[in-house]
Amino acid sequence: MAAVERVYSAKATCRRLRASFTRAIDDRTLRAWLRWHDGELPARVTRLEAQAAGPDAQVAIAAYSAELAVKPAPAARRRLVEDLDALTQTTERTFQSVIVGADLMIREIATAQGRPTPEPPPPERVRSMRGTLRAQVLTGFLFTYRSLTDEELARYVAFYRSGPCKQTTAAFGAAMTSMIEESSRALGKELAASLKKPR
Image 1 (cartoon, rainbow, N blue to C red):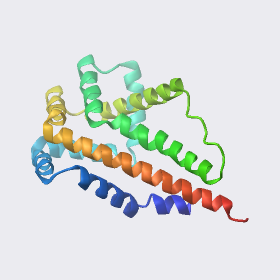
Image 2: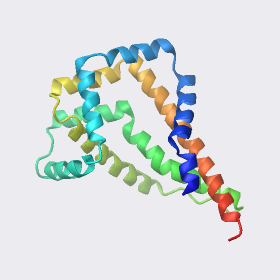
Image 3: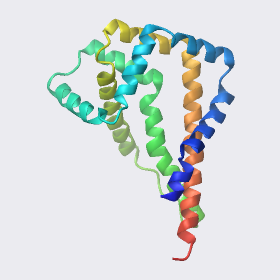
Image 4: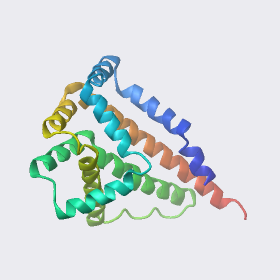
């Protein structure tokens, strides 16, 4: 537990993210990205995203998911959140942090202990896990932005299609991947070292 707290502390995580992000983005692109967030719609979106990340949100999202099972979202609305997921790389980024991070940590432990590295999960299992995660992400998006009109959500999606946002998203995605890989390997090494210590 102590190793997890050290490796994934807010300070360590922010340091890794900041270092990777600043290497991948230039000031001009970042300023253009920040300018968009000065508007009224971005301010509303930020509030909605903060609320959806609150402590009580998961219960509300679960209830909303049950409603969707009875009455699915309109096709146009679903296409918008699918586009947003693809552009923000939310499913892929979350998949990387959970699945790939765990795999890297396990491999690091096996290497440190001189054991064969485990086989990667079968492709069909990976597809199933990614599909389950994507369904959860889309439900979360439908819940988070439910008070926006289709036109407002389309404007948000259009922002993510813009050059500055594409570059910023790519830079953040690269920074996240780098942080996950570095943190997972560091945690694997710490856990392997602790397992070698005499009890």
